[in-house]
Length: 503
Image 1 (cartoon, rainbow, N blue to C red):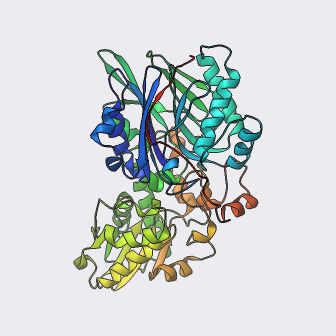
Image 2 (cartoon, helix red, strand yellow):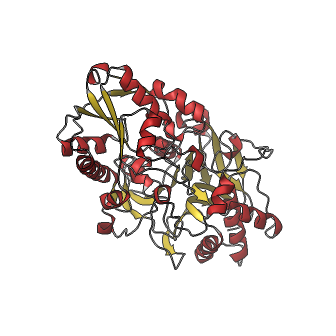
Image 3 (spheres, helix red, strand yellow):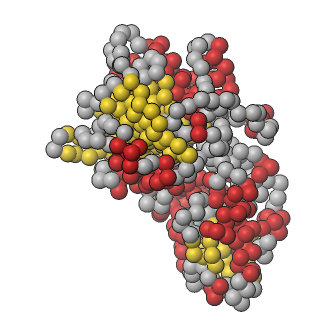
């Protein structure tokens, strides 16, 4: 999970890209970067940390140009801490490319070998995003017929990328002297939307991971980028779109709606907020059916993602809804923190209980999901410390029993609390009196996807069914092997690249 944005505007884009990254900060807190294009020159700054910590005034002033891309990262493939793996990535051949990527390739090892042995291209980090950049660069070089890179050739190169790459990827890339390229994998697993803004000087375009970035910055949402589709926005103001994968089908990641996306976003036409309300309603109906005698005094959400579900669940059960935890908004999201120890340490820094909402009560805590169980265990103990008589725990998502290999930090089965455990064992592990999970069928119905032409979702972390067809037991076992030593690297994180475009 990462946040990406790309803009072609009629005025300097540095502040616009910064503001968009702030709006997408929930998608990644490990690193951030911005690259802008001024004629045939790229300007870039990136580093580890939150957006507000990576960029200073002097950095923003150096990001010149009317077009650019930006990225906020949390680690999926590659190192969790290396500054070298902050994005965007740059390569100077054949035309000068800067790329940002959200997702995860599942055939990175094969591609890395092909790049070295066949394409004669060097990859300097362990990041699959750098692999993707070099695949795109190679295919652009292969299709280019002259000094001027045509739009048809760009779309043909994307088609070849789709033929070679497996997994999930939403991509924004700058091509020196030409424009902004954006494309989405043939299954549309990771989200990408496009919008426009009309100015006196002409039309400006923005692509982003979530619609909230467009809404807040004055852009009108046009639509989602379709699976397998590529968009090209020229620096001269042109806009073209083309399907580059003939067998594409829409299968978005269901976990985007459960946890990752902001509630005020719309993905593939589906409102994240309304989906979470329906999740709460269906979970409430399930709890009423499974345990009509439960006798809950109060429903309390684990802020922030679970609030809509908890509110609707409380309404369905006819039980008071209360805010029992106060969140410190200056602590990052624990699910996407890179280390287990760091996640555990941050829970009590992030949340503080309102004791009177727990004392002598039977409470039903509601969270969006239970992944590793670290947060759940700490929160249940906080409720007991405040004097709760009974503590029940409800997950708005089904049990997470399988790794997500498409760009979410669920890398191994051993780390997932629900793997090999039933509900009774899970309740025991987190210290709750009882645990309730959403049914997967109910979750899919809560999406109401058919209304928007979304007939299926990637549910791999719940069901173990991997939509791309290349993930099997041997692949999952390979994820569970210890990582090797990090590749040495040398990288200047703040630089201006003088690129003379051949386009």
